[in-house]
Each structure stands twice: as structure tokens, then as C-alpha cells.
Image (cartoon, rainbow, N blue to C red; front, side):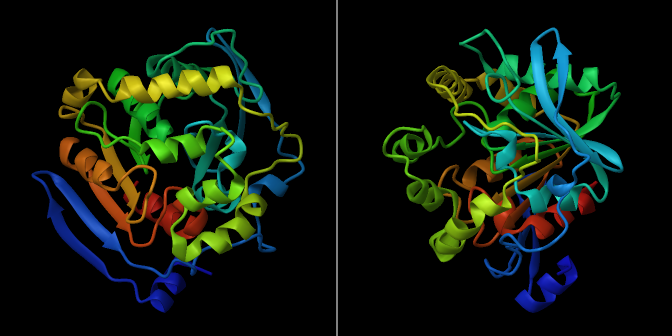
Length: 318
């Protein structure tokens, strides 16, 4: 189903308005079920038997990654306790129609090994930079989801000439202006005994689509035939929790965002229970000339709900 069809069937209304002094915003209205592919017999990049995981040997340690597609390079940074397999395969496949897509594991996950048990957002940003340099890219677009959006912000602040376009998907600004993950939600996502699959689905997706998500999430994950999934260790969980905590007190980065000159697209769902949509509004009002897109009924992992629609928004912006 094309994006045009989705919008026609769903009766999409795009409402343009100003969000703050510099941000342009639009609200995309769509049925929460229209775009969810749900393990359909459709083309997906991870079913290509020629696709293999590669490992970049960098000064920061080995980084496991996949690259596929054609077009301008787009590097995706995943979120808290997430492996690269947790991207929606259909979302990545849509992006790969116009981009060379690069997905990788953050340090300590999968084949991105590291002896460093404690790290900060700076380290994760430098890991991303090391991968980009290892792939010999002079400039890239970067998409960060959730905690990955925090890493992307630090990457672009420290390397503004490297990043052509910045996409922040369901993320949070640095400093006290940001609204943190609610404590009960963080506990569910932390891998504790309270984080059953059903409860995780209940915070990643709105109630209107939760049952569908429980049925579709695992089947829609990006799973190349040679990817070796592994559990996230307690040490990595603790390190990433510190990343989230440090981000909430990083006032310097928040002030630096006001001077950012990189084209930025901010995407958020109106029913995000992990990172409140107000975080994205703050980001769009802080970063000069950023564009904000709110998707009605979108949850924190809305790339599973709207893989085609979100890919279209990203492609339209670049």
C-alpha cells in the first residue's frame, strides 16, 4: 500500500502551524492500523541472503553493522537496551529505496564489543563517528531513535559539518527542559522481572494497537539470517541508564542546540508513553528552523505502526 493510498483511505489532514519562534510543525492524522504491515509477505531487506553483518575495526573497538540500499547514506542509531534487530524491517526497507541504510549495535551489544563497562553519551557519539569514518563517508544523514536521538544530538553538535540532515525520532532534549522517562516505564524497559513482553508492548504502543503489536512486533523485526542476537548485559543496562541520567543534566548541550545549523526533522507520536511528545516540541522550538511532525496515535515505537508513512516524511524532508 502506497503512502498516497494510506493518506487517502485514512483521510489524512495535514495542519500547518508555527510551533515556537522557528519551528515549522504539522500533525499527520492516520488510522493506527493502516500502515502496520504485520509480517506480511512483502519485500524486506533482511530476507536478502546476500546481506551479511560486517564488523568495522575502529580505535573505539569493533562495531557490528549492516549496510544496504541505494542512495545517500543514512545512519540509524538505536535506543536504550535495543539491538539493531529491533528496527522494523519494513521501515528500513522503505528507507533503503532512496538511501544506503547503515544500522549498527551500540557498544556492548551484539558484535560491537567493548571492554569499557562505564560510558557516556560522548563515547557512544564517538563510536558512531568512528563507524562513519571507517565507511569513508564525508557526509551522512543521521536518524536517532529514543536514546539514539540523544547520541545523534551529541554527534551533530560535535561534528556539524559531517551531518547533512538530522532526524530525531521519539527523542528527548538535553538538560532540565527535557521530560524524562517515567520511573515505572523505565523499570519495565530495564530488563527486570517486571518487564514482561506484554508490559513492554504496553508502553511501546498505544492501547488502540497493543494487541496487534503483540502479534506483529517479533515478526516485523529486522532479522538478517546471520545476525546473532544476544541478551543485553546488566553492565550495559547500567551504563545506558547513566547515559540517560547524565543527559538530563546536560545544560551545555541544550544551549548549543540553539546555534545548530543542521537541517533537522523531529518526529513524535501523540501517544508516546516512554518519552512525552512535549520533548519533541521542545526540540523543535530549540533547534533553529527544525520541522516537527506529530503522528496521531503514534507510540514510542511508531516505526512499526507507520513504516511507510514515516519513511515518506523522512524522504520528503531531505
